[in-house]
Image 1 (cartoon, rainbow, N blue to C red):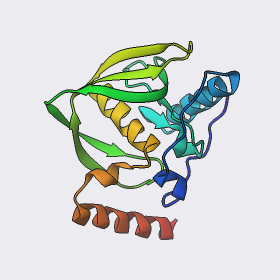
Image 2: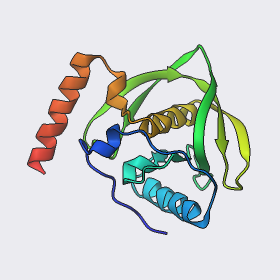
Image 3: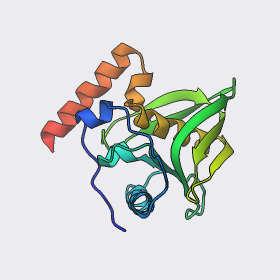
Image 4: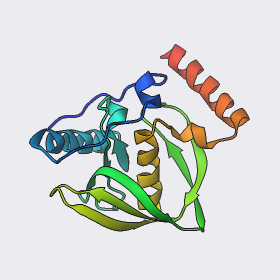
Length: 167
């Protein structure tokens, strides 16, 4: 298990759709373990495999207060989303130094392949739901700034470029 580097924007992998996972193998379990280590080191509440350059539909999420309760998901898909929305400041280690207030459904029901290789359906609410949706976006080649108006997105990406050039 190890902390992996998050690939920097505008790496094309962040704009690519990740491949489905056929089965849960030892390699998949090891990748999940590395993803959890990476998420904890950020610190963050979720991570999609494309963020570390692994182009598979793998996600880890841990929005618990005590930590250590990470949910490992392969091929997650939202089956149902609440009508009620929730705003939250979102960021990404792939775009360090910027964040934005994003509105997403407050609750979602997600179907995924769990660590035991079984199909599971689970309800997520609040920060858990926000993080799951954010990570699924990464699997689909989207980042949080894609949820903003074109003007706001352009403004934030210009800010990111300035920060990146200074570093």
